[in-house]
Image 1 (tube, rainbow, N blue to C red):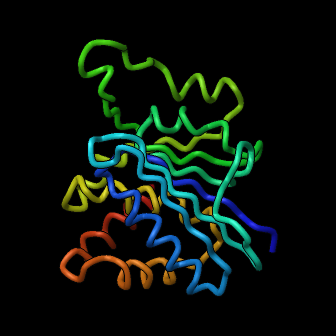
Image 2: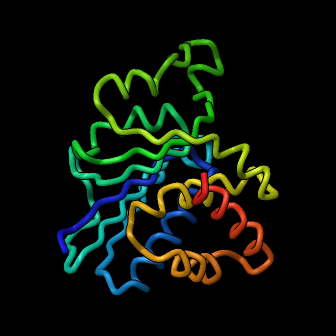
Length: 190
């Protein structure tokens, strides 16, 4: 199998690191060679967070460069735009439609760009947009946005549903497993 690349991008506090841990565990369980690299940035202050996950028969580096990502899972629209250049021509961005204003917007030094997703689509970017926040709240907590998005992207990996559920059970704290399984299902069926 050729090496595949996945980027998980978001804002600090959205659970992108848990999502990458879940994906990494799932892929290891499926007998892939997996490399994961996390770039935290100013994650504790709401800054950009990026995780690279590469998998295949043999992977030498976790780093993904421009045009190498098969899938980008974006927890926020602006993050999808920021990292779109990393996507392969036939790749997919799964993006939460939620808007989280960065600090320059909050302090009035900049405006949040309008029509980000439409501009990406006009450039030929394959986007699957989902209101993951609403689905996460239906599952029981806004903090489940990460697992909803993983559910949305899951079919792209060609890995059986039951393997995803097992990975959730082995990754998420026991008291949150049922809620996260519900969040995954809502994303998977969206």
